[in-house]
Image 1 (cartoon, rainbow, N blue to C red):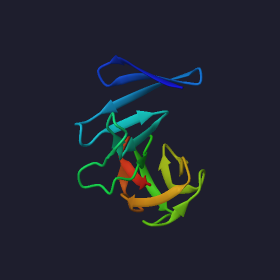
Image 2 (image 1 turned 135 degrees about the vertical axis):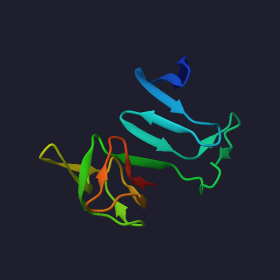
Image 3 (image 1 turned 45 degrees about the vertical axis):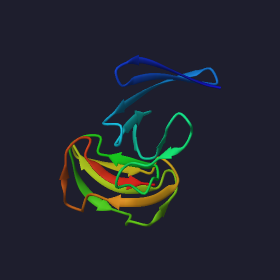
Length: 132
């Protein structure tokens, strides 16, 4: 059983099988962004009847964004749009503070869009790749 309790504007407490999670939701009704467990989700949502309500301009699929954890330089992009990836695959290699930061796929999926290029300087939270 799943129980959802709103604890503040845009902040929800979700209980699943005795585990509690905090979920943040932002954006207008037709373009919601969901922040959960360090990840960003954006995509198809349902109304109370359970019918799918796709976002305007979207194919209705669930997308997950891979973002830069801090300001960094893109050293290598290892995927292209349309490529299938497995959970844990390195997608983008960043360099920050003289360290290499491999950005890994959080789940199995397909690359929907690559939004960075090798040599780019990116800010914290910049979207690098979108996955479906």
